[in-house]
Amino acid sequence: MWHVHGSWTTSFVRGAHEYLLPVLPEGGPWGGGRCGRNWPDNAREVPAESLRDTDVDLVVLQRPDELALAARWLGRRPGQDVPAVYVEHNTPRGDAPTTRHPIADRADITLAHVTAFNELMWDAGSAPTVVIDHGIPDPGYRYRGELDSAAVVVNEPVRRGRVTGTDLLPRFADAIGLDVFGMGCDGLAERTAGARCPVRVRGDLPTDLLHTEMARRRCYLHPIRWTSLGLSLIEAMHLGMPVVGLATTEAVEAVPPDAGVLSTSVDRLVAALRDLANQPGWARQLGKHARETALARYGLARFLSDWDRLIEQAIGN
Image 1 (cartoon, rainbow, N blue to C red):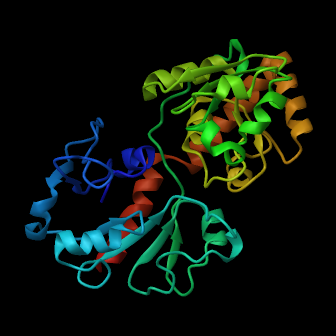
Image 2 (image 1 turned 45 degrees about the vertical axis):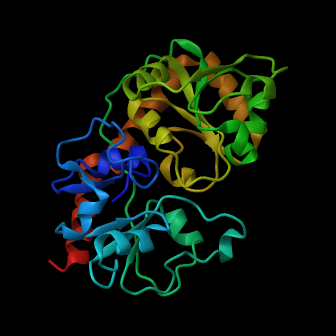
């Protein structure tokens, strides 16, 4: 498998298997190995030129180009000569309801979706599909909420624009200050100038520090229009943060009414942010329910157990 989705892989490699990550001298998207991540020793880097002579039980695919690349490096075709599953992390782009998946109609590779919404929207034809919800290591209850602002975690908000709801941030900042964490936030301050409350770019922080800083904010804001389900939302719920967000994609399944406020009405969400700013006790109550929900549905043990079952099925054990 390749290191494609850092947060998802951080959970995946905590299982009881040996995970082989290809390495090229130049690194890059096809040969970065562990990319310096603090993962268990069973997530092992393997030189790409050694893969042909390496015993492999299963190929975990995550990008369309990996089908041909794995066949070339292994000397074995995924799904035909060696078992394979394909993990789909993303919602379809373009004409979403009719978008065909790259492995549509392939009977020899199971398509594993990370949300039920993804499975609903992708056209996989006759390919077998399964949904394995996200699961993360519990960062612990850290909520303090003493800062009268909302935490937003998003990468490249300027480039991605309406997809990540960047255009909505000034409207949300009418109610409460926003602290935006993530990579590629250059230019965001200019995009949000003129908002009544400040929109502050906090940058890309190490995970543990990010969690601590998120939990100091009054609530977590999820302004993203079109995403599978941001893991930062699940992390915020684990931390004990109340959620305010757009009622789009999988968010409506992840956040129950007693854990936050979801709506397609921006005005209603602005009102909710204002209420949370003025009612810290209500915010704490919602956050505790958010944590209970996250632990019950998005725990690491359940995630790994679901994957163990799919791996055993894929390799025929």
